[in-house]
Image: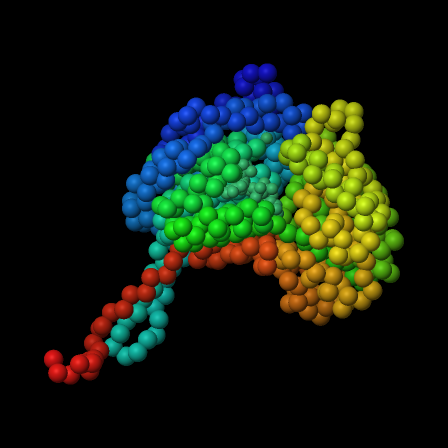
Length: 503
Ligand code: NAP
Ligand code: MG
């Protein structure tokens, strides 16, 4: 198939973008290298996308440096206005963006339309509105002095994101960085670069000045690593695995970059015996099976009170088996493929790990055959672990794979929930207000959902503790992450006794 055929087949109106976006222009990589991006439904090639190397990153950094003085001094409201226009353009191009995202990642089109695209627009709109509302302070200091604190942008910011929510994650990083007056060099994941290049096109249409935003698809080990090391990049914001996060911290040491890390998770989703079971069954399925479980905040440890475990699992497994797996472009599809074959095999590998450690497979556990055999599909999989210390209860699988554990009382529930190195999101289902708030306080996590799971909003801080990283996206916290305080002291009318009276 040619690019034009693919475009026609999925109903895209404009050509698939396949060049780097540097200094306001779409350009090939200097050495002409490309990488193939695939459709995970059948692993056909969708596009050959230019692959940035260090020389291209250097161009992007220099463009961002040139753009920074004017962009950072532009009235905040004017920066905001460009982001607000971008949000409108995302909505005007919603159908096309959703198709592109589904084609590249395997997200069911239904989800791309209802979640990814609206959430992306909402994020740009929120930070567009925030640009001129985020303000400094005046500090009450000693008499005769005025001390005021301004929030200055950091400078050129490097951003590296993974493949599980490419459209949303680029917005979570770029929107606050831009609102605060930084310039951006963004590296999307090598296997899902397409929606971010479409955003580059819309940025230009929204009036973003050249060089403020640069989007450079490429390999993590080359382009990503180079961004993390780059002496002229003042901050790196990273979302991805804990192992890569560690490498980024090491690479950042050269120029002591500011670092922000959103890493892995192993979310505890705790169902108490007084929970509304219907809500908990539905919510727990959403927690793990939405986006094929490829979410850092997935509820991948399903913890059930032993009194309700059997009934819950019967209903939960029946729901899991009824989920419609299929081509993401089919509007009926509820679960699509994983985003790459390599990742599918990694997820299936955990079914073997479970068996080796005495786990009991309750549902799924295979790659479906038939029409879906050529794609990266995995059935919704439920495994009961032998112990909460087993690998399947400790390691992030990042797929439609949920590990079931049981507990006998609140003390044991809390102990199991807090028994991993991660600390990103956790949820609990209960009818008792007191217990809910006690757990919210005690859970080792950056986010807690009560009688719900996996809610996000651009106003609410998102991030983790422990091996899940540090720093927060969204809300005022994100604006703080992308700025640094400058304290200015003014002697208004203070009489200072000389320290060296001889003079
Ligand atoms: P990954 O391997 O760490 O990759 C993430 C990004 O980092 C990709 O763009 C990757 O490039 C790049 N990269 C790889 N090596 C690099 C290096 N040495 N220096 C700089 N960049 C490098 O993660 P993944 O497996 O693709 O993504 C899944 C992980 O992301 C999971 O652990 C998940 O929990 C985590 N995640 C966390 C959050 C959160 O907010 N906490 C949200 C979503 C996902 P390539 O594309 O070339 O590999
Ligand atoms: Mg792809």
